[in-house]
Length: 230
Image (cartoon, rainbow, N blue to C red; front, side, top):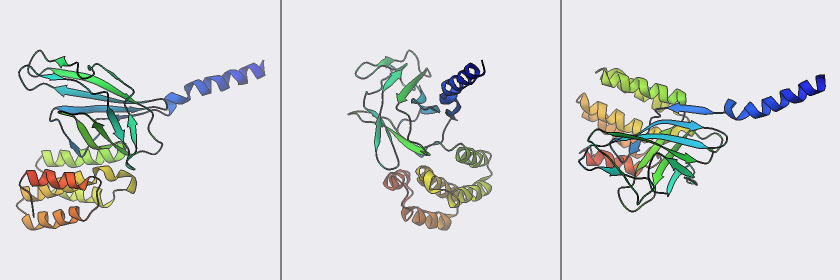
């Protein structure tokens, strides 16, 4: 009887292991994205798959949306993991036709399980037209919390406090969390300009250029497109 009990306990332990190693990242921060109304609501990381939950809001008459079959998770080392399935969204060239302006479509993208220790990813749709992308999606829950605090300060008008907090986050950023680095520089520069500190913004722009942040050219291009150039 004792042997049967031990065996049963082992079976129960093995069958419950996958859920015990699952991780749910709610509303992860990201560095840059392509579509204004496309948002990642959460990322579910399990031993068997990675599920990205997304929402897009229609802002135009006769709007439509689809997801290409060629969507990839891009790891910090440049390797790719291809989409395995999608739910709630047609595969291009089939499209979902929005009925009204303001309508929201929720859908999910499934990928293979993430590499162990992954703290950030890019999500890229590799297609010919109007492709979507998210760069620097942060999977570090603690870091996401800190960034949310900085964003909250800025939204409340506590600009100088937000700048100081952003600088602290950037200065303590770990090597594994570099995906959001360019966005932190961008926010610091933008907030410094908001306070009228052009000298400080210039200094941090130069720091960003020298930072070797992943996809640095995209952040410089983003700032330049907004008229921020030194």
